[in-house]
Length: 251
Ligand SMILES: NC(=O)c1ccc[n+]([C@@H]2O[C@H](COP(=O)([O-])OP(=O)(O)OC[C@H]3O[C@@H](n4cnc5c(N)ncnc54)[C@H](OP(=O)(O)O)[C@@H]3O)[C@@H](O)[C@H]2O)c1
Image (cartoon, rainbow, N blue to C red; front, side):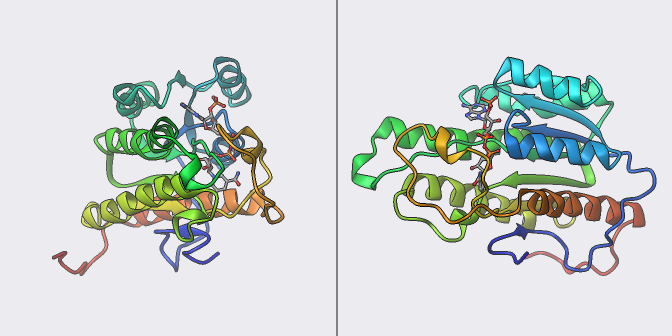
């Protein structure tokens, strides 16, 4: 995967193996969704301790039950204060926090002039402000060498017609991640931006407004999730090896 359509922020020459044992404590927010659920399952299978967060209570309980009754937190993107507290709630439940993955979002389709303030506000709240609140809150819990990750999408690099506000909301989150990656260099916190292509998860059919245009065939969900998990594993392996020497000073 390249940086435009794949995983932005991953180190190129990462070791592929997690430290033994991989004892990272990871919060997956949006684990009730297809991508978030797959990420939570994959990191748990790789040996991490997991906490999950989601909006739908029944799906959240089911995900937690599937993952050895792991800690689970209900949240709504419109409660930004609650979003900001998810990291500390997970850290309390898991005895610390090494990484957080934001994998929730909403999409709407239609030409820009057909949108409305309320709809654009919804997309920027769910896709930008809430993930930022989650990740910013978790930063206070994640120590040096930990990781932040968010699923933005290829539209963050290549805005798409009929999805102007969705593209802009994801690009804004991507810009925030780029800036935080620079800020966190000396802390060695890995900041991953998963710019996945279209995936057949049913997300487009669950649009809050409009009908999806003809979309390209869905990409390989398993490979995308594996790339994200590999990015987290690489961060853990680097932290295990200790601080990098000779890191240039940031301007
Ligand atoms: N599928 C794709 O083609 C694709 C490609 C690139 C990027 N992405 C991004 O990947 C993320 C997950 O998508 P997905 O394909 O896994 O779709 P999905 O299965 O529909 O998952 C959407 C997730 O967002 C959560 N969510 C929606 N509105 C929310 C709100 N107001 N408050 C809290 N949570 C809310 C849902 O929670 P509940 O289920 O609990 O309601 C669910 O966990 C999204 O950010 C999407 O933009 C998707």
